[in-house]
Image (cartoon, rainbow, N blue to C red):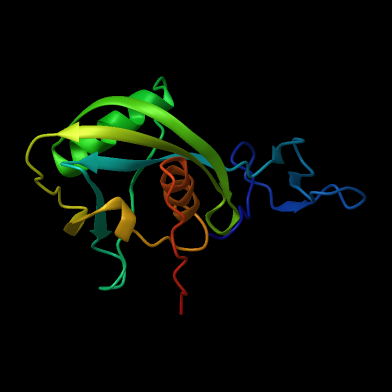
Length: 169
């Protein structure tokens, strides 16, 4: 994602205003606006359905890659409400409760991932964001090195399963 080039308040060009400290931040010399570029909160769901983990493929992803259900936290919404909403929107499943697994940095996308386990019931119906899904028994899950992969890893470990880590690339 490209950094801001212009101030959203006064439209002046942003300059490196904090040369002597880290992290460096872009600022407007005209009005004093500081672009902090804080990470975006994202929820991730390890969806347990009929004794298996649901992994889904986003339409924008490579054909071989499946991952967790994710979504952006909306204003006025708790992370628990968000993850239950995302499971309903993306899979049409009813999630009974959201149990926090952990919080993970995802610097490549400037996000903070809030990972949950949710038990869900119903029949899977994909929304237009996803184009495939699969049930994977927990003991057959493999994890990916980074992002939501650590959420799945930590949930599997909590169940006494040490998952293999996939090689990407």
